Length: 195
Image (cartoon, rainbow, N blue to C red):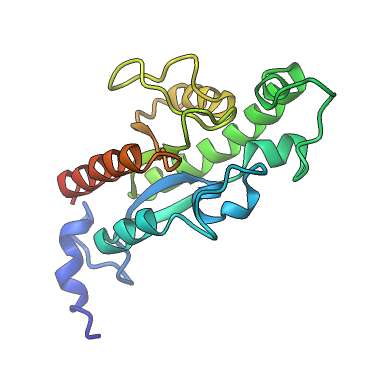
């Protein structure tokens, strides 16, 4: 495959200088399990490995992927250890769970802010299915997530707001093929609007 000369990439950078490489300077932040379904709670994996449709869409449009740590793994471990009768949502919504989600969200927000400071465009934060206790994205409006969103998503939205960063959130609802197709169309349209 022959790559274009560096001068062909100038339109991607505001300084009018050719980059030292061919990066697109566009990315999305994705929940851990989009790239590694093995970390999902038992019974929640939809793909054998990764969400290939989403990865192919990003590849097609030259959009990078920032993999966010799984808040459930960070807080509860692979086995999702918690007291008997305590749901995953309740465990993440506890003082310890929220502190863990807050620490993870601060780390992710710092990386996103660093990308933006470097002139990169973070096009979206891609969360998970509507049932996800940590990563569900429920829209209150086009610019705000609802309180029934996952605990980590709520805390991350706050961490980004505190830094003055406005990035759209969208759930990748791969548990339902129709909803996933709708989410992929939304993402494809976003990529087309943000060349």
